[in-house]
Image (cartoon, rainbow, N blue to C red; front, side, top):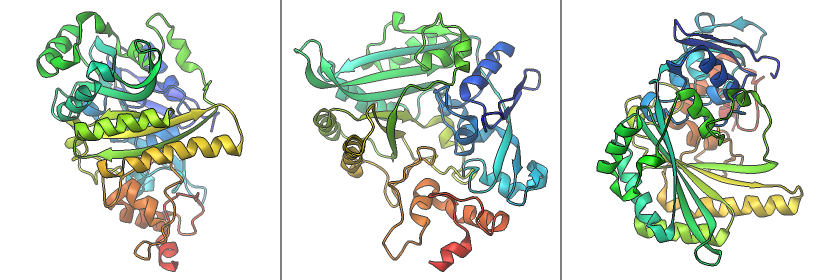
Amino acid sequence: MKNLQRILVDPRAGTAYMEAGSTLGELYYNIQIKTNKFGFPAGVCPTVGVGGHVSGGGYGNMIRKHGLSVDHITDATIVDATGRILNRSTMGEDLFWAIRGGGGASFAVVVSYTVKLVPVPEKVTVFNIKRFIRENATDLVYKWQLLMKDIDHNLFIRLLLQPVSDPQNKGKKTGRVTFIALYLGNSSTLYSLLKKEFPELGLKKEDCLEMSWGKSTLFWANFDNETSPEVLLSRNYSANYSKRKSDYVQKPITKVGLNLLWRKLITLAKPGLVFNSYGGRMNEISSSETPFPHRRGNLYKIQYSISWKDAGKMDDDKNIGLIRELHDFMTPYVSKNPRGAYFNYRDVDIGVSHNWTYKEGEVYGRKYFMGNFDRLVKVKSLVDPDNFFRNEQSIPTSKSLGDK
């Protein structure tokens, strides 16, 4: 897919055409060199490919204002199992629904998307604030859980919870939370908002950095404000090996639970957590509007993260074991029946159940897609009855479900 990199931004229409082999960084670069009035709600990692990201849902730091990437797809070009090249009008609305959050790889080869861009202000505001456990990190995380569901939709705050060394306590292991924010507005408005709604955070005016939305994509990718936007065109990704898992939280974790979580993180010493705030626009879109079902009722999504450098079964087993242990520990605090998961953090630990009440393919299907799984199976059975497009976690056909 790497040769399918063409991106066409139309500032007058507020649209973009993007081929599936392009990256988010290339999309953001092309938007900002054409216009400062529009952006696109998608991920913050510039090396992520457009094809998989968009077809599986696609979330980022404008999720509370504008929802997911899939909520803004207006057309697509695909090649189906018989070799036909189709667009929205010729593929039909059921298949068009399926590839907007159900993943393209189960149904067709997605060649391109056409999307509606979203308006952004001339200036946005960002900040990055770190707090150790000794600086009331537990209370701050607890308050964040209560706050983000209904606060101004223009505000997104991501939390990173990590085990770190405390420089003020002889390097002893402790926990630290990082608050990373995007506000679609100016710094004075953001400062006033959080001074009123979240004074405990201790936000200072000098913490708030104003910049264009285009520059904010660089900030979120960990580049400084003087970096040229051309860096977004790089396809180099530095991590060697990694494992990601996911969860959804629907009730605030108590302070007792958070203290236990800190203890677990410090004991494990390596895995970290990313909390991504929901609410806002995500509470306004039906869970069946697209295959992505995790909308109203979710306070935030958790990403479990671990990375390592050395190859070999011993290192692999050790690191994967750590993140599995952390995921198991979180069971009482996250969604249940089923325990939800984000399709784009494809997790082969979610496999085939030996429980007779589930058929093969249903285990991961229900966790990723909830009640939308049945409709995805119907679409799959119609457009690819011979299951030409398949992988270890693809949407099964009704025939394959029946055979089990």
